[in-house]
Image (cartoon, rainbow over all chains, first blue to last red; front, side, top):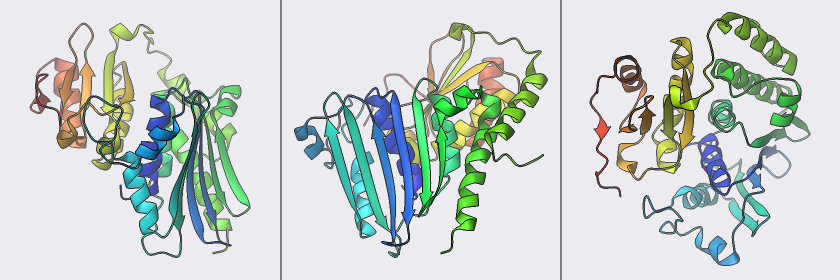
Length: 182
Length: 129
């Protein structure tokens, strides 16, 4: 995983496998404490305490197609390398929140990557799941809520709309980045 | 074309697009569609599955092929990522390995359009990791 967008896609897949109907994805940059946070919140089936403890073990997986599970271990590795940390809160039957914090003043802080590209594909491939994406830099934020798209009659699952959705996300993220003083 | 930045821009783009593709009959029965599943687990993502999926979504649409492109988990062929499972109507699914944009183009032109088998198929009884 060489950027944050890849982790975002990867961790969101876990939520989908946990049968989540609502998935929140937050990417938050704060200049006061110099952190970059990736947070994925879902209302999937959640995990027991024992399972959460085993998550960071690369040889733990619930799959039967292979014997390793590297998504969470990689995420833990990249944020700890960047002087941050990983937090997992999960309740069985209620859902899971995963938060990876990176220090932006650390040379190993991950670059953002193609967030609009991954996000537009994630939305397209899972039209039955409600996504709420927030990109926040200090006090400025951009929110994309699939419920809002639905109200507006925008069909984000249509192949012809993929490029437009990607551009919409990209333009709004760029707009925030260009107005914020760094 | 104008930049898309607001929900209204998105709506406008959708209307323009609908007007253009209106002539194409959308078959709703998934059995009659080409199904493309791009493996999008940790291994797939790290190997570039995003570019491949983006390519399938846009190109199949552009080339007027009725298809559903979606994502799936890891099928155990991590060494051969990005992997793509293609199901032509009425046929058994076939998994292709080491798919990049060039390979994806070949798969569309030769397998999806012509039904011709191309290199890179992972046999069903092949070892998973």
